[in-house]
Image 1 (tube, protein in one colour):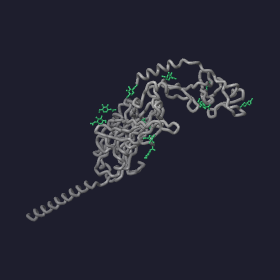
Image 2 (image 1 turned 120 degrees about the vertical axis):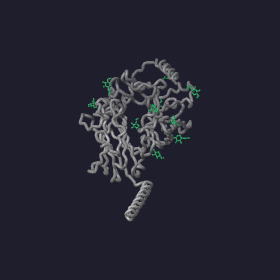
Image 3 (image 1 turned 45 degrees about the vertical axis):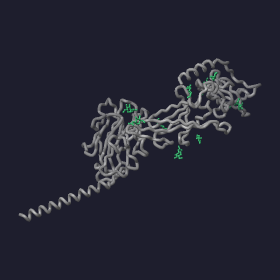
Image 4 (image 1 turned 60 degrees about the vertical axis):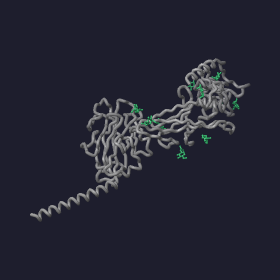
Length: 438
Ligand SMILES: *[C@@H]1O[C@H](CO)[C@@H](O)[C@H](O)[C@H]1NC(C)=O
Ligand SMILES: *[C@@H]1O[C@H](CO)[C@@H](O)[C@H](O)[C@H]1NC(C)=O
Ligand SMILES: *[C@@H]1O[C@H](CO)[C@@H](O)[C@H](O)[C@H]1NC(C)=O
Ligand SMILES: *[C@@H]1O[C@H](CO)[C@@H](O)[C@H](O)[C@H]1NC(C)=O
Ligand SMILES: *[C@@H]1O[C@H](CO)[C@@H](O)[C@H](O)[C@H]1NC(C)=O
Ligand SMILES: *[C@@H]1O[C@H](CO)[C@@H](O)[C@H](O)[C@H]1NC(C)=O
Ligand SMILES: *[C@@H]1O[C@H](CO)[C@@H](O)[C@H](O)[C@H]1NC(C)=O
Ligand SMILES: *[C@@H]1O[C@H](CO)[C@@H](O)[C@H](O)[C@H]1NC(C)=O
Ligand SMILES: *[C@@H]1O[C@H](CO)[C@@H](O)[C@H](O)[C@H]1NC(C)=O
Ligand SMILES: *[C@@H]1O[C@H](CO)[C@@H](O)[C@H](O)[C@H]1NC(C)=O
């Protein structure tokens, strides 16, 4: 492909030597120059005479928009002369494998069909590029080769045909059409496969044939693509249908950098099995809920720190009933039911809470206040409620979590109870016997 590009550049350089364009002045004073009919130009309707409203030609240097919007159909704006010319002229310039030509009466870059025909390429030579960024995967296909082969890449879809919206982009000096899909199972026909270490999403791009005069000249092309992710606290959230999670923007002190952070609930101590919304109101009493927070904030000089967490039975977190879980970045009183696994050491925070912490409440909401912490401060992972100058915290709320008496659990509990009763009554009997003997 590289050598191919090289030859395109060479051809294009040779092809530039042509005649210098001249400003178009009409034929026998038709259309009129705008100056002769007191005309004016607007971006929406072009250049018109003041009285007759017929089109006129802008004089050099007089188009206020300096663009093809001042030019009549099948004319192009030529910046060097600041007037309209007859030859097609594209701004920005076309790429090496393209020609500037009139499409729907305006100049546009299109695949150089002569060039592509001379290469004798086929559908087998269509290349694609996949980019896996965060929760998105993007597939890009070569615009010009596909168009030269009579396909319509602008109308590409994903495996679900209603997922459309291909975007024109430039990638490694070539025009491509790109489609982006979120990494979630089922979205636009994504399929997910998962093993112990990785999760992969697969889809395919469907490129339809060009329809000319109502006739489709070629069948669709379909190209499969996939993205694989290490299973982490963050990427595991893609693997379940509706994870229990909340995303908020952290305070960056007005730098404008994206500092989205996510607090999610997990069911396993490695924080890789997110709790699903369908599970959240049916948690067995005594179970542990693992809470993980991550941020994508790029600056390595900062870590994520949860300052405070508390639980309440109310949705808005304002009620008077409050159970403090984390204070000053650490578990409250080293509470036996709360464990802070990691805080203020990286871009991830981990802590777990067993439901016994909420004894007396069936339904709880969790609220946490978090901030970015400058490593230079030296106090990000310390237990403190210091008043030092730091970024304001942002509150994250999750819930409701509802704890149900688990059937197995209560059954074994009853057994335990009856055994105790039995022992108790045996003991009574024994004491009675002893006392009778005395
Ligand atoms: C030319 O048009 C402008 C408004 O576009 C108007 O103010 C001016 O009087 C016109 N001049 C003549 C000579 O018609
Ligand atoms: C158009 O070009 C002229 C001179 O070349 C310049 O003064 C003017 O600001 C330009 N207008 C726009 C909208 O770029
Ligand atoms: C522009 O040029 C094309 C091809 O040369 C021609 O078919 C079309 O009618 C022209 N359009 C106008 C408005 O003159
Ligand atoms: C298009 O490709 C042909 C054949 O390679 C070449 O001769 C021609 O100069 C190219 N046109 C442009 C505008 O680059
Ligand atoms: C185009 O595809 C054919 C068949 O797969 C292959 O033989 C040929 O080398 C490819 N050409 C280029 C320029 O990649
Ligand atoms: C993912 O795509 C959505 C829109 O589809 C966009 O808002 C978001 O910024 C993208 N995320 C990344 C990491 O590119
Ligand atoms: C596409 O269609 C499916 C069902 O046919 C529907 O569930 C889905 O929401 C649609 N997607 C879009 C982006 O319209
Ligand atoms: C898990 O899947 C990934 C990506 O599909 C693969 O590279 C890796 O070898 C697989 N690991 C195991 C243990 O199967
Ligand atoms: C080709 O793709 C279009 C959607 O772009 C779809 O409607 C059509 O059914 C597909 N044709 C075939 C033969 O798969
Ligand atoms: C994925 O995990 C492997 C091994 O655990 C590690 O070497 C690699 O850097 C990880 N990749 C990413 C993108 O985190």
